[in-house]
Amino acid sequence: MTCDEARIMLHALLDGELDAGHAREVEAHIASCPDCAAEFAAQREMKRVLAETNLRYTAPASLRSRIEASLPKPQPQPTRRSVLRGFAMGSAVSALAATGVVAVVLRQDDQQRILSEIVSAHLRSLQAGHLIDVVSTDQHTVKPWFNGKLDVAPPVIDLTAQGFTLVGGRLDYIDARAIGAVVYKRRQHVINLFVAQTSSTEHRPPKTQTMQGFNCRRWGERGLNFWAVSDIGADELAEFVDKFGAAMKVNVEG
Amino acid sequence: MPATDDVQKAQRFREAALPYLDDVYTLARYLLRDASDAEDAVQECYLRALKHFDSYRGPAMKPWLFAILRNVCNAEYARRASRPSAIEDAPGAAEQTPIWQEGEASPETQVLHSRDASVVRKLIDALAEPFKETFVLREINNLSYREIAETVGAPVGTVMSRLARARAMLRAAWTAEEEHSR
Image 1 (cartoon, rainbow over the protein chains, first blue to last red):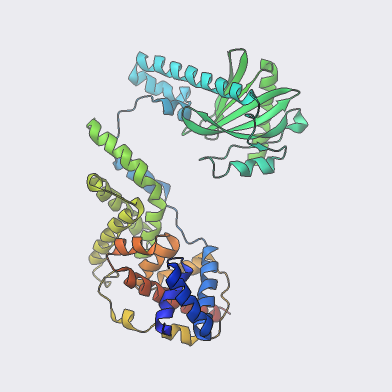
Image 2: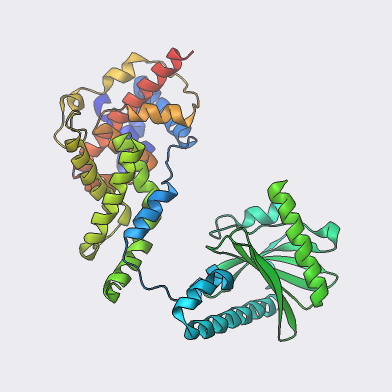
């Protein structure tokens, strides 16, 4: 192999694009040619530095929405997914006025179905070995664990000092989507806090519902929907949600 | 209300193509060196891609979008009458120059220091075509040599020599920049 060839091939070697035979040839040349060895080392170094540099651009949100707007769209109608994402009875009110009574019934059915899935997920989690994927009482361990597993990492807040012990996190499936569950304990009672992304950023005040003897308190804020489920009393669950909300406020504004 | 077929097609297109928006935009920024031109080119690229989505047979969505974007950018360069066409497939004089030059200009292995991303982006912006696009497709958009070859319509051997030259030029420019700013 000549130096001219090696100066080209060494890049393919760096990029892992050579088969074993060619890779050996290039390596053999580099081993016997100090000039090409120096070039190889220099290029490897540059590749390493480049890999540590953020060279990508992020498309502006306005561009994304312009492209979205140019795509043919279905008539707005409540879908199962939009209930989870939107969870937006508030913003849906105006849509309801347009789509009529049928939509109201659909929507409430869907809300009920989501609640029932949440309670089922809570029940599943209570079965042996299903409660926690990552065991930790440290929020700085639990939060990074979610990264890369979900579109949005749920806020993980340690409330031990407030009487609710963080015990870990788990991936769960609600409405055919992976969502995060943060697990707390109050005495021996488990509280699952399910967190899903929503397109609505409006604040939705907490509301408690009961199903199969479990209390579920749900609310929405900062682009996230929350469902806290437990067998503890409604007032204790409300206390949990209040303390979580206050701590989150401090975290965000802190 | 659009026909159901169109809506379903748009939905499939949305799921297949929109995840690569940042990749396409990144390539457009490097090819056109202008944020608002890049936005226009990317939007045009997605419009054309949707139009031809029926004939898309894969395998990979990303190189397919890049090939469309490249055509859009070429048209944009043709429109910028004052500037020379930046992307051409015929090997120019620059490509035939041996790649030795830059390497020998600094024979000792000089250590490059990490620089601000904005500095490195400018160095890449200054690379001549068709070396720049080959470099960006490989190093920033992470295409394989074969995917690059398909995207730019050149043999893999050409891709390899362009990439070698792009990196030699970048390293020379980087070294010069470090000495300059010292």
